[in-house]
Amino acid sequence: MAKKASAKQAEPMKLFYIFYNQERWDNWIKTLEEANFEPAEGEEVSEGEQLLYGFTEDITLSVLKIIRLYQNGRFTKEETVAKLDDVELIVMTGLPEGELEDIIGSLQLSLLVLFTAARKYLEGEFDKDIKTLVKKGRGIDEENLEEALEVAANIGAAVIDGATCCAKYIKDDAENPGLFDEWLIEIENMSNAMKSLAKFDEEPGEAS
Image 1 (cartoon, one colour):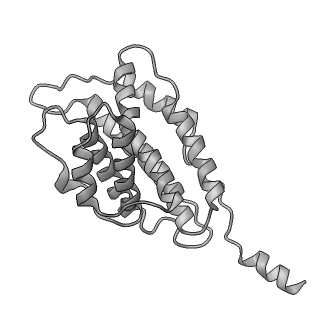
Image 2 (cartoon, helix red, strand yellow; image 1 turned 45 degrees about the horizontal axis):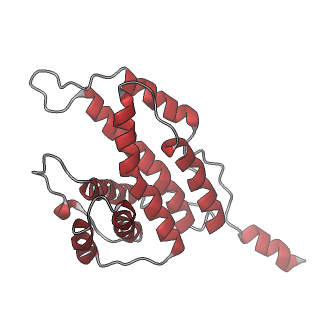
């Protein structure tokens, strides 16, 4: 009996952290609808573009908090997958009407690598040779979306696992970056997010 009680006490504290919800998504969409996507005089980046970056960063952090808590032993693999499913359903389902439709559609396409990489990391089978993966990904025809995403997801999983990528591989001078390059940009965002979450929920009982 004592052994059972001791084992129960040793279990990680369950967290009721709300990672993402529909209201949060809707609030961002409303803010973006009211934003100006034309740069002000003398400015290179518009208000809307700045907000869009914050929007992307918010989603990326929310997803990787789930992964970080899995790494900390807070969630089982099954619980982690279920929480990822919840966020993915909000982020990747449907499009707002009007001018934001194309913008959010493009955002969803770039975030494909976030969710795919997170799942690949949880599966535990991924390549860590970043240089070779980048070269391979750039050699894939963009029409072959699934193959390119598979390669990018390997890179993302390696980053979640602690590898460094992808600043030196991102082409700053590219006027129209391809989809694979867009995914590398998102993976760089993931890398920065993982660094910022290094101490996330480090102490037992903390939920933020």
